[in-house]
Image 1 (spheres, rainbow, N blue to C red):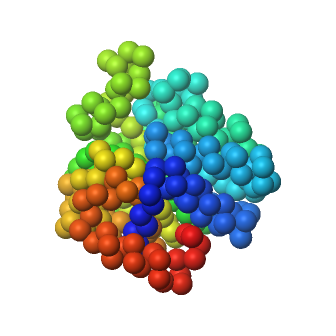
Image 2 (spheres, rainbow, N blue to C red):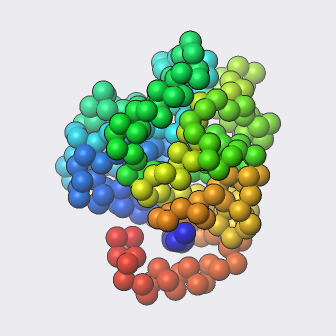
Length: 261
């Protein structure tokens, strides 16, 4: 696991977008794993800018999102399909047929989970997975006690996650209590992943994920087992990392960090 500390949240968003764009230019058929949430909005804004001003081409790219609420149709204001359409898919030249999210309205949810895993496998696996981190340390909706070998499945949301996300709903009581999520094992199978976290509110959980013991109670700690995981944080989110001076030194002095500069 490598840690990159940026001075501001905006700098962190731009850096992640730049790394993603570099991979896309090297491999136009890139298979991208995407995430939702307010942290990702800055990344998508920068990617849209790069598409418009620098001709960043998404036409051959395929995308797979981490998760989707159960019971929300794609047109619902709080569905993740709508989030992605409004912030990225409809603003760049992605082929809609190449954008994939789990179907939270599927009649057979277990069959939908198996179908999604098969789609990822048939695409050759995910080349680069973008991740956020929740207050309970989840990646995707892999809540506490998620098995590290888990695959795409239905997951009940924790009270902390519900409390964190319900304010996004016009009627908070209508927030779904379950979601379909890629499993921890699905995420660990990706060729490369970038976890992005910003803000002081994430400092504690970032420190646990990066430097704490590996535990099913914090699914993000599983990323310590990933062979190519990069953690990009702003100064506020890095505040409780014990090794932050070492991480800064490594970033400034190691030649393999060139793509992140």
